[in-house]
Length: 514
Image 1 (spheres, one colour):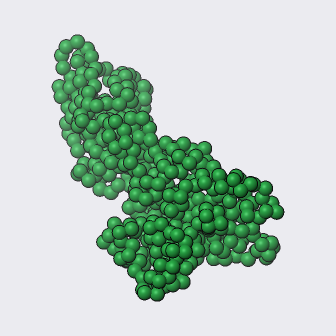
Image 2 (cartoon, one colour):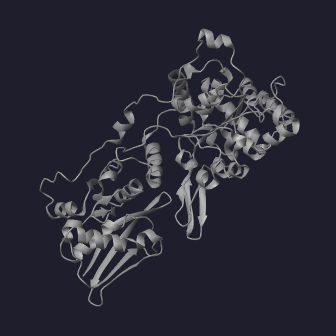
Image 3 (tube, one colour):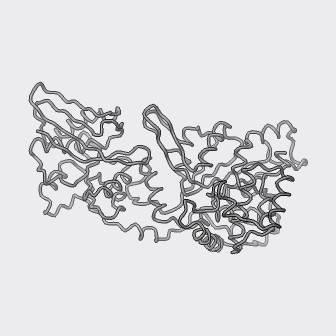
């Protein structure tokens, strides 16, 4: 007997359908699996046999061959257990062709027949819906994330025996089959309490607040420098609260990454808040960028996609780790090459970094700082010039005046700042309609002159800044993009002289890096 069952797999974030071919033939009892399989897939043989026995289904003593097509693509993970078991049951004539038609199966089997959650369900279900498949059967714990894809029926199941009964009697009311129905748009509209705090709680630091608003409006990278205790981490933690809400497409992108990484909880159907990741400075390059042996996983730069990646105590990170971020910052994606192929993960995040100006943290205040000049230069030298060139705004924070603390002088709230940012974003949305760009920070060097055009006066100002600050070509373009965002915040169509001068003030200070 021969049967074919539909399933799916992911390579990076790209999902593709897998045809599980199961054949039962006469001969010596054996169980062979082929199709470019990883070690986890090869172990399916033992899991499937024991799970079926403990669920009351005895596999006949015969020659069993399982092929996962296309055979040329490597398969990893444990999601093929369920489709292999269903294929065996169909060959044993315990399931009909009608019961499994137009259905995709995903799930890991426990030895007692339990169907356990797996990774990467959302992108696979999305691919199945695009290919016209009408029903997917997934573990109960993965049902919510699968149900956010419209136009496809989702069954969440907990045990193999329950699934077989439901397939044999589809018209009967089966309370053990979970059939969620979710409208993703409604999930995004539900407002949750902001857990990250409000900008009105930040005392003083007007320059940092302004820098954070510009960075959020144009999706620029931001570096904050200052002594300990001035509010760098406090400000960074509040930046996601002033970013506009995720769109449905952005939310599906982020949720797909979390699904592949296995970070979605059973109660979570969709990521509705912008991600905020703050790795410790001991993080490795593989954990930050992504990696793995045969089956690469997304790193923190991908988990922070469409959100904020906060690097506190920037010089304390290994220099090789920091320099590995150059490509993700420039290309907005990560490519991980292995012998089996190249995997690409998105990494369109906003980098926010914070650092002290010296090892003790108090330079240039020589009343407190006891660091020698070589110590200061070595400390600052851990942040390379190419990485600094990729940071659009650098803000210096000073100790807060006591009057701000005693009188509780407050500035704009996060809601007020977000409203201004959303107006600026709408200008950018109109400007870049029909292009690959979304924000001013996305514009490539080739198109900067087109989207950030200057008048004669402004060109003369930029010429003076270029020679005075000894800018690189990349830094020159980043000043133009920052000035374009400042003009958008002021709701002005053209970049003016004052916008360029303010943008130039956010370049890294020569007092620290020469």
